[in-house]
Image (cartoon, rainbow, N blue to C red):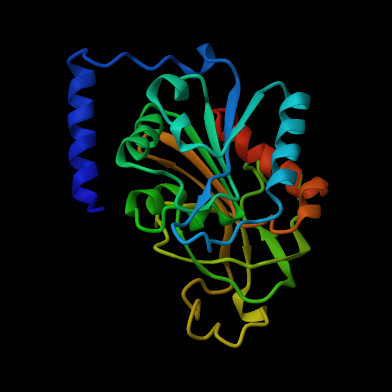
Length: 262
């Protein structure tokens, strides 16, 4: 999908909005605090990896919403991506989605429209493995999943303690997970959590990531992209992670920030 196609369409959409042909998006304060949790995973051959943590991640986000005052809807159906439906959400959470997230270009365009109108997006763990053929999605999410070494314990460091996703975390902590490597990294991302790739047990690490990131391989980040707010964390492979207070506070802060909170 060439970038120029989407850039052209965005300019055309903005032109319509300027001419008053598109309804103006309501300000975030006027929209009910509601998020859509999206868990789609599809490959034509049925061989795509589906995480067994999805139910646990959904339950954790529902609990966050109940405790913090935002509604949570959950779906794995791309047909939910219509202009009318997405208007009710402040943020879309791609919770361990993977492979093909959408069925057609119209659904992809609705996601773009949502972001361009100021909507927030949150990606959890394998979300960066979604839409692997769509460069706009990589840029929006902040990077494209490449691979990970074996499950292991590594040290996570906080690099932005003021971001809501990190305020409840210690400056450094040990974490057992899949340490995701990404390529097509958006240079505009602002890392929140990092680790030192040189300390990972990975016989292929000299090939990638090598010294591309020094001692600060990004694990979680945020950025403002095309009018919206985007937060991503690579943590969260295990079912039990979603009952860990650290990860829950991390994800909650990311969701609140993506919805427009500080």
